[in-house]
Image 1: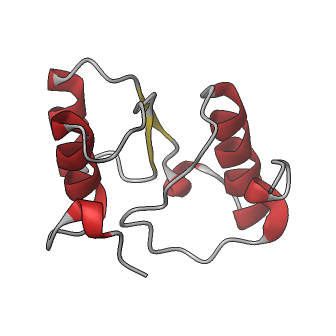
Image 2 (image 1 turned 180 degrees about the vertical axis):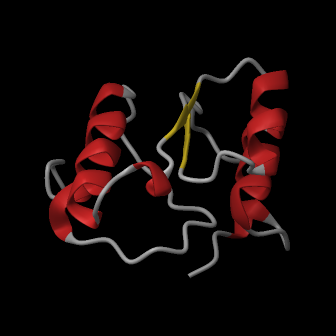
Length: 101
């Protein structure tokens, strides 16, 4: 379901734009990406947002990658995670660590 506060844009940039103008009342605390060449890195670095790259190609298998991703998420201080543009299937390993509800 699309959030009307984001307008016609989708993805991370739409969320960032909505936060910047106050239509999405959240605080962005960190960008976590699995793509070390993602365009979002430069944009968020300019805004002073902390960035963590968990490059899936650096891990021997899916379990090791997902463990590293879970640790990055746990250490982020975030209360909500948005998988904008994330195109991998996740097992419950990364998100099962967090309370839902």
